[in-house]
Length: 187
Image (cartoon, rainbow, N blue to C red; front, side, top):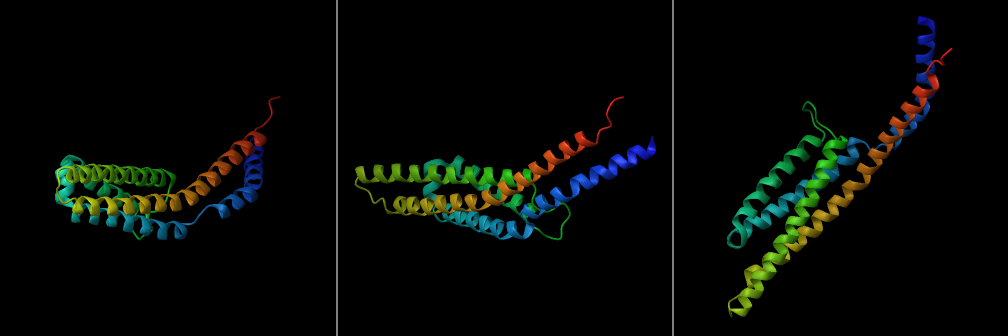
């Protein structure tokens, strides 16, 4: 009985080995993710710089949103730091972290779009009241640039994340197929 289990395990490893190696070669490396994560962190810093420079205008429009967005950016930056390679324990890219970062970047892009709309609304209100709308106009332009940069870096991260998910999915499918081929048949 023990010999047949050993043979089954050996056959399982042989059947799995070559295809799994091919899938692992297709999987993006940490070195591929790191520059994209650094870029994402830079884009988030740019967004924070915009919100900080126009803090008075943003607070006048929606102070609660401003505080929540700044808090969300810090949390997303922490997740990026954990996902970036380093010497620390439990660091590096995995699907859970990548999906979290992609979701966070999408949320930040939506937040930037909301700030753009709020800035345009206040700019129009100032024009109707014959006041100078320049600061709201400048704020709207800057958050529009932030919006585009956040979308761009999200797209850059999406492609290797999808390749990673696809390779992992293929490996899991192979494990299931191989396991079903090596099961002893009932007598």
